Length: 213
Image: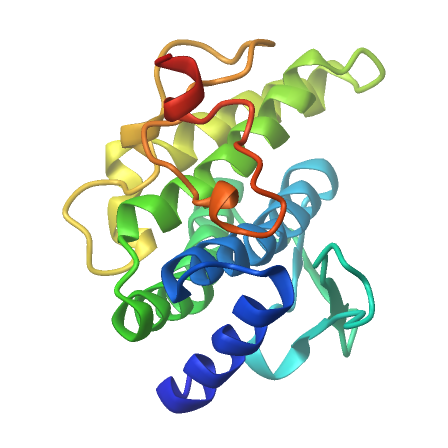
């Protein structure tokens, strides 16, 4: 959350992944960091439990010798809060803790430091959340109760009424990227995540640059 430390860290990532500019490095960083939301929401929906993801309790662990930069999350105290109240209120509180208290501050600081568009960063998060709940919907091994809960949780996460749970937003920052029903096809992105500006020089399969050609 310290801007000078964050810039230094993103520059180190830029060198590691061979990004042509700091915006591309920032985007790739948040694509990796966005997976924390998958871990958190999976636990919330599947197990009715809330992980402790306070800044003090979460660290990134990276293998700097690996050519592919894929950090892992380290939870210092692996503790959860089980559902003990009205689930709708508990869910709203859980979403607020994830996005307003954790993801949004990082996203905003990252955008301020690197000038990367928040639209790109939010879509980096959205694609993982859509993938998570599409996986739930298409999974044959889960119970009907969990399936119903997954559908309800997803609809709440992208609902207009949830916008205040993401931070200082008048509109839900994830909803703009969702069209139609949960499905099996690859969704076309509306923004480019800049993966092609790293040393891999590869576009994502759902990149708007690829699909529009």
